[in-house]
Image 1 (cartoon, helix red, strand yellow):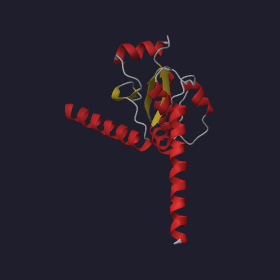
Image 2 (tube, one colour):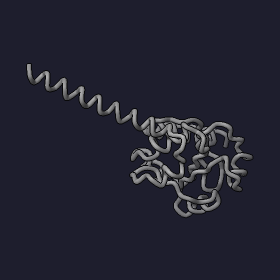
Image 3 (cartoon, one colour):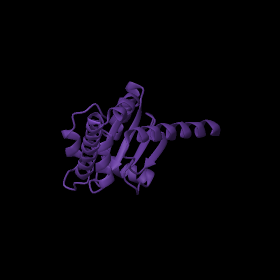
Image 4 (tube, one colour):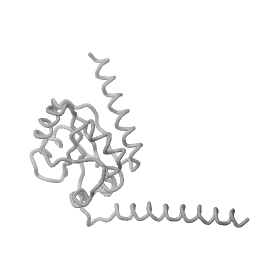
Amino acid sequence: MKRQIHKMLLIAFVVCSCTGSAKQQQEQAQTPDTTVAQVQKEQKTEGTIFHELTLGEAMEKAKQEGKNVFIDCYTQSCAPCRQMVKLVFPQKECGDYLNANFICIKKDMQQDAEDVKYLNEKYKLAIFPTYLILKNDSTHVTSISGAILDAGRFVETLRSSIIEAEAKANQQQ
């Protein structure tokens, strides 16, 4: 009887501590005064590595490394964008996939930079976050719009979107 009570208390403790942790993460991700750049600098994880490169530099690095380019198109005022930065990109599963296959860069779509003007003009981005996948010759592979706040689901969505886009491209040839 005592063992059952101890087990129940232990389970309740674990459930409560996990729930509180997730709740704290969500509250932190919704903090409006934390910029995406600040979060990126504070993170020391096994997660996604975002390079501070121009689009052209990212393409060149991707060619050298035999990878494609992943672009996180975000805005500072976008709460789902901040949630992705705090909750998804730092995850090992996300980092393992993105770092192995892509040169990852971030672009604040409210900035007045040449890359941002080009991306807005070319892709008519209106929903944030939007993730662009480009081949290293700048050919568009696929795009995903909206936050997916689970790293495993995000990686799986990205993989399936790329497979579907490549299958479609092969059929058209």
